[in-house]
Image 1 (cartoon, rainbow, N blue to C red):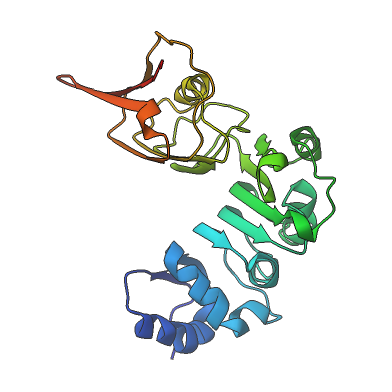
Image 2 (cartoon, rainbow, N blue to C red):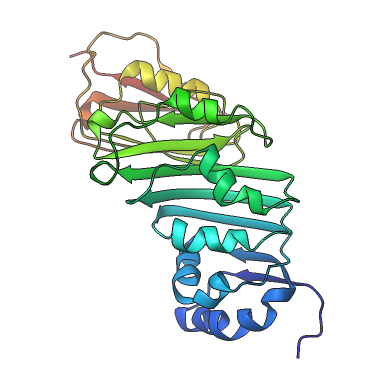
Amino acid sequence: MILCRAIAISISHIDDQAFLSICEKVLPRVQDRVNKLTVEPRSIEHVLLHYQPWITRKNTLKLKCFSLSSFNYVTLYHNRIIPLLRRMINLEELILYLTVKRCDSTHVDDVNLYNEILIYMPRLNKFMFSIDSYVAKENIMSNFSSNEDIQKSFIESRYGQVGSFVSDTRMNDAHRCHIYSIPYGFVDFIRLDNSFSGGIFHKVRYLMMQDKRPFEHQFFHFVSQCFPYLEYLHVYNDKAQKEKQNFTQLITFPYMTSLYVKAAHEEELHCTISLEEKDLSTQFVTSSN
């Protein structure tokens, strides 16, 4: 018997059998009374895959706040996530941090967000998001939208300013478009590449850089200005730098505590860590050979 009128559920750090039991036995009984649901990123796919009734039921959910985050590629955006969000007509706050992989549709932009999700949430007054969408080239038309087109689609957005960047499709096997609300409200920024258009990201502490084009010295300088409080930096790149000038200006990340570089030409990127009494700073220099 359910005695409480409103329930908050947090699902994290439990074994698979217990998690499955919650999905099959607990959620169906309390879903109409839940006003807050917290699920860690590694478990959300399990919910979307193995609890179909919760996604497809016709009745609405009473949730007022919903946050969904996944650092891995999500392939269930159209079939699972969108139908679930459409049931949340009482939602007042929505937070989405997703990397969406699509093979039979276009990237996620303002038109998609409004027509597929936001139009079903008349009470929504806060929408914070970072949605990075990948669409395989061979499955859609070749006339991809430019970053300018993406920005124009958000001109009349009622949820504030939006940042975006579109990857250079000549270098990749997929069309990529990353859109995010400004000010950026997350501590992680993943898969940044040379198409990044800039901005100031005070809250970001972890940055992952990845591209099939080389990261040049000037680009690292650009990144250091955009992410002034960065603590963790991961760099994935297998292309040698083309600009071999002797740069005398060091690139400094004053709050850096961890640097990971995985590249075929790691000798071109050196990390000098200087310990001071109250500061740990990381500086980059590129090889001038």
